[in-house]
Image (tube, one colour):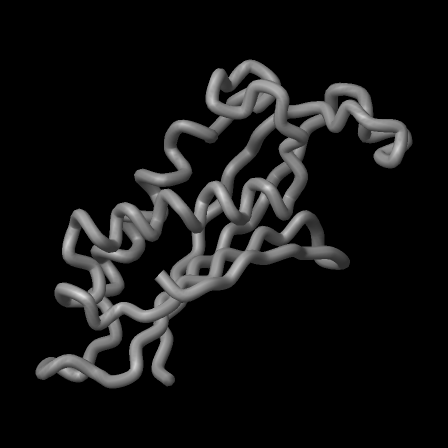
Length: 131
């Protein structure tokens, strides 16, 4: 399987309102480095997995509504605990929809997407699935 991965980042604030999160229950900020990998079984006629420019644009557009945002105030996230893992899936779903509607992956060639959020140099989480 072939893959192309692009990177961006977001700065957010949120709280994680459950005792399991200890001090992170309170409002705090985070800067996530976001990697999105796009997988295909084969290369297209131009030798590409996906157009890197289109993949970069799709990731930037997906992250734009989250940039400098308090996730606790996002209506779509009401009642959700916005963990790293939760955000990975949210971003993955947005990229999946963009891939289908914007032609990333040449009309069905794209097989899989992985979204990884780096919380720090010590910890990261990801969501990966077929589309």
